[in-house]
Image (cartoon, rainbow, N blue to C red; front, top):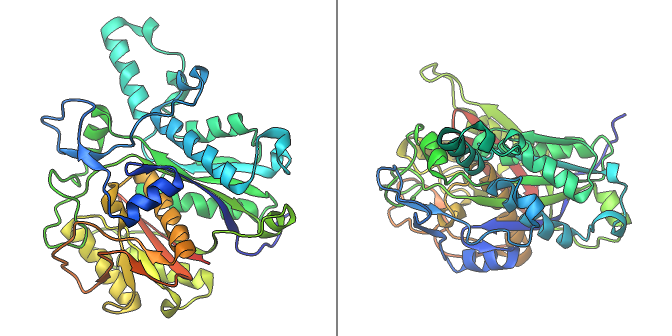
Length: 400
């Protein structure tokens, strides 16, 4: 039986990003314009199509060895972010919380799974033989490994799942979480992380031809591609009546609207899917373009895709009709972790009344009101856009 609910609320945030681990550390660095992009140091990157990446500093050292031995770095980053998000939401483990295990769900996004773990075990296979391959290779690489590990670690036995749609997947996971709440589940751990900076992972991504060896400069005349990064954000999404019943007095915001589309075949003459995703999300939220206070753009960083996004924004909001920001210029594009991190930025912007900047852009190439410095703003409604390589488009409306 489906239960009608109001727009779900976000009660907890956890962040692991190249420019900050933990919500407040990350947010302080974002508002200061501090980038986490730096030269590749984990291996010799000579010959690879990137020179800089957004690497999360350190490792999840607090996790016990029995966890680290069976998980990829991508999963461990999500575990770290989840611990913070659950604390923030006031949801403790087991008997410390006001939920039955089956009231709690986990739905995450993944783009490429456990690359680093898989590369290591393939190296062992070819150098030493199959008997040296870890038994955990059978699960650690899999897209759903993070969801499974979070479910087991925190005893969350409600609906569990994973969404795979590259950069767009993080928003799709929140939308799937909203659907799950409408069926009676009380809270969902959702969002996504990524850790695709190993040699194997970078080679796989480079086939798309979207990397740059220069700077990541979306909507700039010098745009030549993006810098890859790792990390992301985990969020706690709750049914509002359930959150209020357990004593939550303040929430970060609400998921008010969502839409997803797929781009038509190139050369078909049909309009791109991003504009349809934007208008669909606004319609789902029951809002008009004039209600939107800021757009957190996808910001692909290539001339073609930036032009497409700028045209879609102009088609909905008019030229310079709404402030547009791309804070991922400080982290790189995080694939499945990128959009959840943008959502975290939106919620913090609503809390503190300030728009985070797009750093590095000095030659704007489009008629956009690009936020280049932190800007005071009364943020009541925000639109987050994410485009996955291959044609995925997702748009999410958040309200205060």
